[in-house]
Picture 1: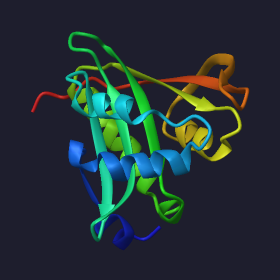
Picture 2: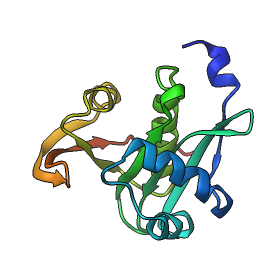
Picture 3: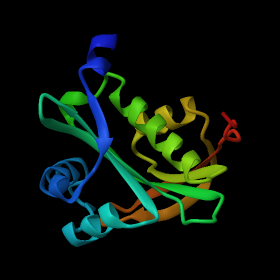
Length: 161
């Protein structure tokens, strides 16, 4: 990864106008268990979440979301996906870190996620970013019958500036 690849990418809040591009990437990334368009549309406007997209030259390369209900100190990475052409450039890691920051801004002290047991690349990314395995949910991802690895990361207290 070069600094240029990150510098050329734009990270911004997702809007309803991004829904079609997000859904195209959602279906390509998760062909057997993609979220429905209605579900994603609701997530994009939920007061409990923050969704970010990664763009370069006007093309949506990735997206992700974090949910922290107001007053809660726990959050969840709802989803994160990078298009195949954007992988291996550090953009997924940068997006994950931005989502962790968004969760911290919303008051989260710990963030949870589930990752497919057969997704070694994502699992390694989460471990490298301080997530630890709490357990497994057998047969969680259907129709593929793949277990989910449940992970958690504690967040440092937000410093007063």
